Image (cartoon, one colour):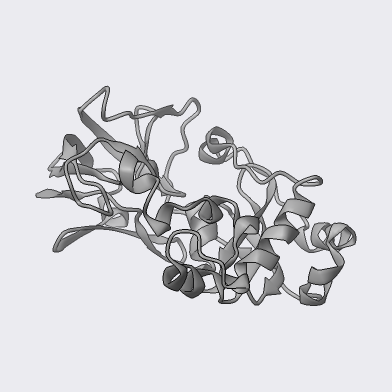
Length: 266
């Protein structure tokens, strides 16, 4: 079987374990069904997710010009505290910014390699946690817009990390934490204007990933340096494909690359 198309992040279904789907043009791949099968990946060309031209990808699936112009790549995406749609102030496209920013947002704790704090739109729960490879997560605030969630995250980053160690996450070097107790402690560090949005009584979400073997020393596949690769799929976690030879491939960080994916009969 051969599939071809531009990479975008895998779609997920929070079952036990998580189901992973890669949509390629009119086809899709359910990677759960391909565990223990040999998969070939070949880089063909680029396709910017915004202008759809064959131009080198700069960041987040966009070519350089689109990264600095498209509203989907504005600074407030990564730094929600920079959101200004609630003030009716435009960054790149106020209609888009209002649509994205002026909706309920969740500030959460997630445990993938260690406890981290993050922000996501409410309708992205639990997708965001799955994408980060978190095996447990907890909502601690629900705010009416992105700005308030952002200033809460900034305050908490002084006391808890906002980063994931991808190697530890893929090695499954993790331990369970009492996220509810941790969140209760962090409440003391929140700005007064967001404390009314703190969720007092909530339970953790636990996530199981379809992994049969974790890599001891994961090595990341770079298709621009190694345009063709072939390996036996042993698992999927976060947005990573995990192969038998310790190679891992991050679908999300390779968005905008057009690839051919072959499922080889063993």
